[in-house]
Image 1 (cartoon, one colour):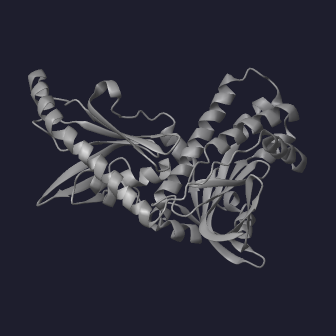
Image 2 (cartoon, rainbow, N blue to C red; image 1 turned 90 degrees about the vertical axis):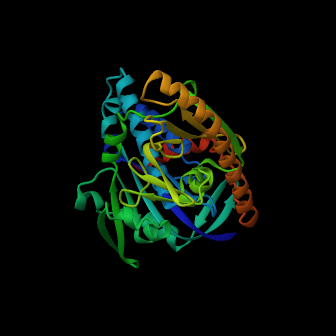
Image 3 (tube, rainbow, N blue to C red; image 1 turned 180 degrees about the vertical axis):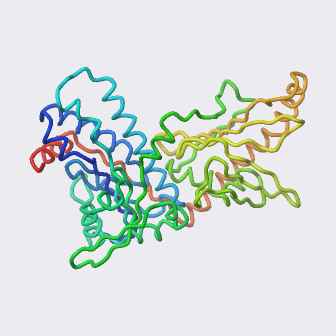
Length: 387
């Protein structure tokens, strides 16, 4: 049995009690089964599933799996957006007129996040977590957050989670809330409303450089999980290495977050270049525009794709945009000669830095937890019985 510190997370389907009471059980079970599959698929490193708990998934992080608390926040947001897309598609595509299918719109999702100490006990394919912080998190699933705030789909962060993830600035945009429990006393929490996240992302048009539109493209495979690799290509001190800069900082953050509108300032001797983020898709890709060049501009997309052994990083630089056709041709020739060696050097240097980091602090690569089909069936059955 091992002891460690980390993030504890519960993803719980909202509105399931009312949904079951008004629905045919067979179709209700089918819907829950599909949604559980989605939640399982989105629990990727550094999150490790401990177990299924009826209509909820309980997971935790292992040490060394991420470098920025923002990454965990965005993993949760990405899961919520995927859940809402799936739910909307289920509603749109069904032709069934039963109450279960008609009540799908009443379902939603909520998350509970705590940071603390726990012990891990291996039980077959699963890791059973025990400890007072595990109990505290589960107590928090019974709360008055919706009653007091009116927010139905949310992430509830404990004060310990805010501090452990280092996201105090992000918490300023959340709703403070407190719960009191017997033997625990008052627990300070922060509630993040998920509906604005969905409204922001549901119809967003992304600005990216596609391979067919790229002036140049450089790829490199890294033996690092995608979430950790995302931190390596976005955290300013590592972004400096990727950009062949002496240093870098990220300004114009929103509530402490890097994202669209944020500017990386990269130092090159006495000069400073700017990279303005125009598109941000967490754990997948981001795009920035650089300083104007010969009256034109280019876009650069850094894209991450999970591989069997880690992550493939692609840097795609667009053809020059704006200006005259002749000017774009001249600029393209100059950029191709100058930019490609720089991009290749930046990726090589980042690879070397990660090798150095992992030599001093080995990256924990958790074995993929395979959830047996029967475990999902048992979780569905448990929900039907309990509710």
